[in-house]
Image (cartoon, rainbow, N blue to C red; front, top):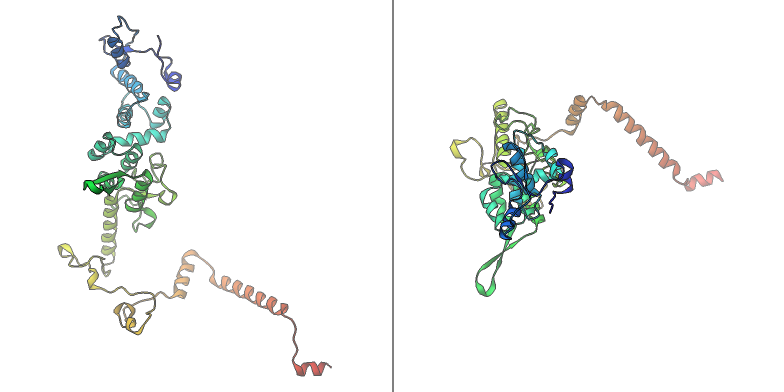
Length: 356
């Protein structure tokens, strides 16, 4: 009787026997087959006794467990994490993927399951959510995982029973919710993404593993519009606040405003929404509307001068605006000349008499 591992395992480690036991008769691999043999009251079982270090025994046990067909994804994740944490041999995600016959993105996403918060793990083991939901939730920070978990379900009225029934929604629904409620596009951030000293504890966004554009293995499934987004709203908010404080310190004359109503906390000088009027760019549609403050301007209202803006931009990017203007005039004159030449010639009545 012979048992073998997968083709990928045979290629990397050679053909393996059904059970392995160190000198202390500790079964490293093949425990289920051993228990089956005892239940069948078999007198002997084929074993292979080898000398293994503790690290080698752990590696062999984990790899044998990972290739089981009925393994739960959480057990698989814990096994992969244990292999990556080994001091000797030291595995990379790519090396481990090759050893178990999986892709690097598969290994990266599975290992991430070990960072799920307890309520999500419980729902996963209870089969309330699927592996697709768990993988999406694992990519989020702990606070966002708990916030996103209820959005995996829809409550339905139970009718005559008077109870609500919880329906598991498709994975794509959770993906859509995360993209619109958690992910923050870094191209819209006001702060410098490369500034590692803005919030020293967080460092630069460029090398941050919580940025979707940095961790391609983990975030391989995000849409192109979210290919460079922050998955940590708390860190993002801290950087925005630090950026604002830095700007105010550099320009004390700046006035901070808030969209929240009421008095600000801690004696803040920030103006609440009820203390200022936002000027609307559109024109009023009635006389009554024209009397509203948001449609009025005062001496403190400033508008950009297009000519000045163009001049400043030209100086910044070293653009010869005079040459561009001359070229435009020449092209416009050429088009006008071509248009006039293409028109049919029509003479006045007096001109026709003179010609006759």
